[in-house]
Length: 149
Image 1 (tube, rainbow, N blue to C red):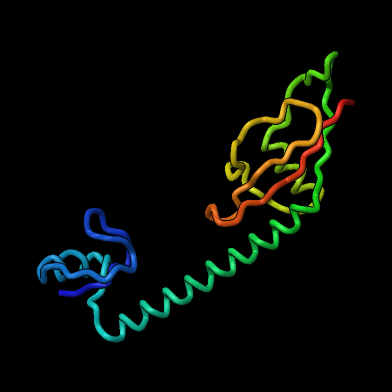
Image 2 (cartoon, rainbow, N blue to C red):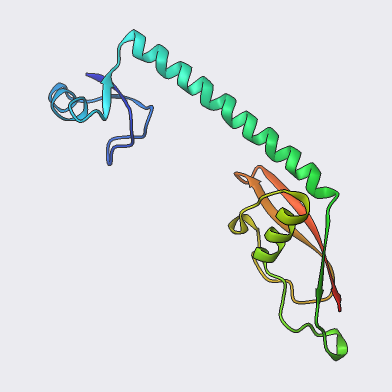
């Protein structure tokens, strides 16, 4: 019997997949537990429509990420830190601080876990920090200037 999965089922398949399973397994477990529906013409049309809507949503998210990337190109974040002789910095500027400053000054919210090479900035000068904005397809750069106070 052909079924369309409504949710992920371990060792069977992923949500939205069209599968051929035994009649008893389909009727007695998958359909009864509302994990799948029988693959009729109508259910295939609904599945195609859902996949089309998901693709549109993904395209919209990617477009938004590209807009954020363009906005980040023109932004320079300024941080003042204490420094000793030889320009050595006491402490560092973390990705969390960069996110907070970006949100506070420019209203752009980023997740600190999306930073690539997530290391603290512990030297004076200009540093470019890379951020994954959308599934490794759109990578933005933030210019961070660290100076002595």
